[in-house]
Image (cartoon, rainbow, N blue to C red; front, top):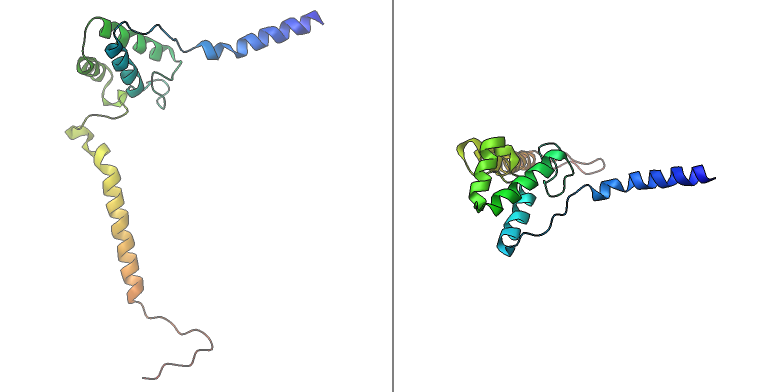
Length: 145
């Protein structure tokens, strides 16, 4: 019986480890820097998970990036300097909202272009169907000309 209780305790302990995986460091001394830190960690994509921010990710790379951002802020680097560093190191994919540039223009314009193309196609279909003659239903008298 003691073995079962010990085994259950170990399993329960292992199951709760994931709750402790995200590091909750102390807040930065400067509240403005803390706000920038939180904003950056919620804007930077985890390159391992790819569908999470580094604030939400438990991947080792995300932990390293959070630590590196914290160190850069403590060293006095600005938000723009940190973003430039991350973009130079990891490319445009690292930001959830990539900057407006020639090579990212399609990312920003694609939703509007697809909406316009779909709306144009729908408009053409409606116009063509409106121009088609309506066939008489069964039981309707024939139209006299």
